[in-house]
Image (cartoon, rainbow, N blue to C red):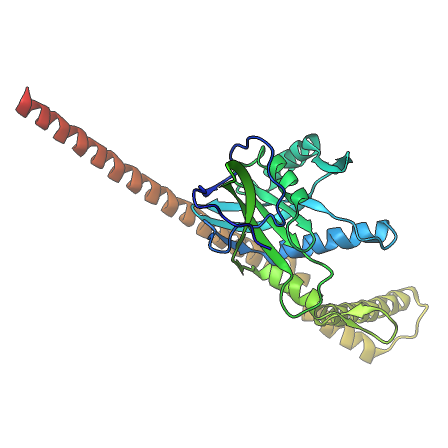
Length: 328
């Protein structure tokens, strides 16, 4: 059941202050007429991380479904959020309420800032169906880290064609004369990169083999390449052992076999050190030249932008001085 908005309710985004005791409501969701203030792009890597986190905790707890909590990070551009990665959070239960370990978060924040310098803390994730009052309690703690965090909920028990992921932001409504935090569902779109598409394809196409092992198209392709390389290595070792045996007089001499082995070695350009070094240095010089040209081009562009800004600022000062001369 949705919360009834009073006629004099004031809807604002963020965490906001709270006063008095909040009346007991049947839902922590805002009115359906309330529209989210931001747009969200979600990367599949976040969904995989949350699913792995929940599956690992359930296996450690002997199959018991436990709630997991973590942080989501990404980029914030204006009114658009791009959720790109996530990490786990440690929490404890005190008198039935979940309390986030801020020291652990501080350590993880320093670590991910060293690796993902262009990403910021955007909110938190958890597992479950619809938001609950406990989620409101956790949201207030997250607001101490980020003034406008978002909540991502994954329901791992749902089995349907739709993606069981919902994203919410918190709003402050004035209900019954008391400021109350409520959730508003946000629409989102999926955004993927090449590495993520490969990983998602590997997970989505997993099939059970006859021996009980799980395989996919990517794994089968890599397995075939591994088998081919392994067979090539065994053949090369066999030829090398035969040549060594002929040199030591331990193997019979076969002119045809030695001729074929010699022809194979002649096909490899790396067997000629002079030619290899010359080609290698020429290619290395070409790569360095292209790199230097790119750096010079970038430097020229930055110098050009600097000159344009300097001229613009100089013209503004000149106009200001002329205007002052007219009035003084």
